[in-house]
Image (cartoon, rainbow, N blue to C red; front, top):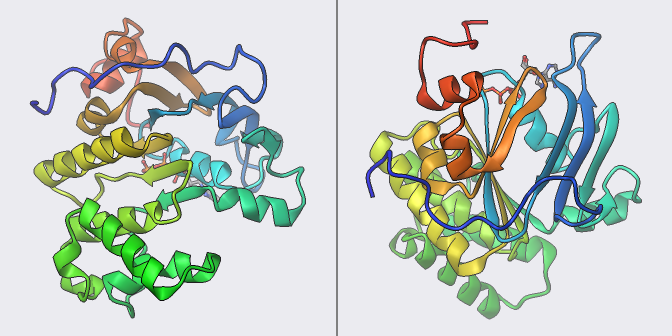
Length: 273
Ligand SMILES: Nc1ncnc2c1ncn2[C@@H]1O[C@H](COP(=O)(O)OP(=O)(O)OP(=O)(O)O)[C@@H](O)[C@H]1O
């Protein structure tokens, strides 16, 4: 498949919020967030992330994609609105329940967020040792399965600083998967990678999703990555979701902003600021 080939596969019927509450594993309703008296970064975000689909949240630099991701994982509390995780408003449940809900998430951070003092094996084993009662033998089977899944079974003894950026991301992906999460979030999986490595990582993400299913949420401004991965595309700009649809509809959109952004064109409503 070429980098700009059409989007990859079926999309479930809808991801919109005009359905009963709790339809989607993750739902943001009217989420508003401002910092220090400044204009809101999120200004009434409504967005549902369906099960068994990959949703890409796209938007120009500095629009608040990372702020949105931090709301989804419960690292930031909205000023207004609700972040619903499996039907629970995560800021209205007791902290112990919020902690349990967070265990259903896997997150791949930009640099893999590996512990520099541990080899890849111990990095991937870390969540299992911290959160489960598994024996070391069970941990070994699980860790090796996931390292093999991302093509790193021969690098288990390497430290993060002995491997490439792409390998670090794959190791971070293995660690994100090891607790069998229902939701996996990717913060700019393309960052720091050349186009070929980005493409290979996106194909790996799509393959693993096909294998395991679940709700995958990808935050990026890389259009080729979005084309490779997305079942759904949401475009964030000026604090709101400007467009949200199945990916093929987004890439065929006649909306001037969506067209300009997805084509990476200089002409259109999107300027330098
Ligand atoms: N904790 C915070 N306190 C104050 N301002 C913040 C905080 N977190 C984010 N911001 C501001 O919110 C805005 C959006 O930042 P964010 O990192 O979410 O953008 P982004 O869309 O992810 O950008 P990029 O694509 O360049 O990574 C920025 O102006 C940033 O300075």
